[in-house]
Image (cartoon, rainbow, N blue to C red; front, side, top):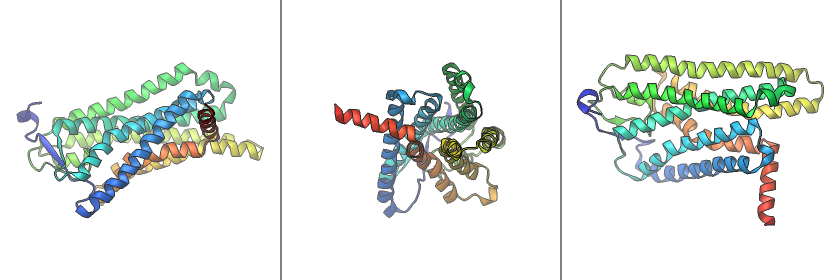
Length: 311
């Protein structure tokens, strides 16, 4: 990168979550705990799905990828944040900042589309159970995941490339705890018009398209559930979808609050709280939501633990 053409700033300083020195250590301990739970929970979910034959189904195939994405989320954001709680100057190089932005966007976009794929999986399972094994074959599931990751990489490449072409010749203090699009745009001393248009178009498509697909899928699912006469059948169908609906609501709710508010309502404290929610809290909650509310996962865990004690 030639700084004369694109940027006179070679380093940024991350402002962090708070400027109050007395809160640095308590917040470090809090987020260290969240990070440990996130890593253990998501790695545990992936390993459980891999070693438990009763979980070798499309639903758990997608769930293992959700855990992988959430784990990567944490690896991209949290370690740097934890280090910054204990250091006086939270410096990050321009290259490190762009790299962090790239991988953050990749996994954020991919997670949104993965939740959509999981909604479609539930739709097929409930609305066309006899065709489920044909429609959701191993090959189809693999192609879906390839598309999910490709969309994440495409969106991240476009945003990061355009961001790296901006000039940053003024303040180099990022009012955030990681390199995100909105805080970086405010530091640019060149026109950000193209970046804002891309954020609106690509961000809008990556939010609205999955949301509409999820709503349509669950519209058909609800219609099918209401036609089930037995109470037990309805309860089982609702139980299958409840964990996913909770994850979708939390993810898209926080994303919408973060990126699609009116500019006049934006405050940096609100943005930081919202960012904490979808970069740290959601990756921690997802394995808990899907394991604690899922009988198959709990039974598989009991069998694995039982085999460990037996050996």
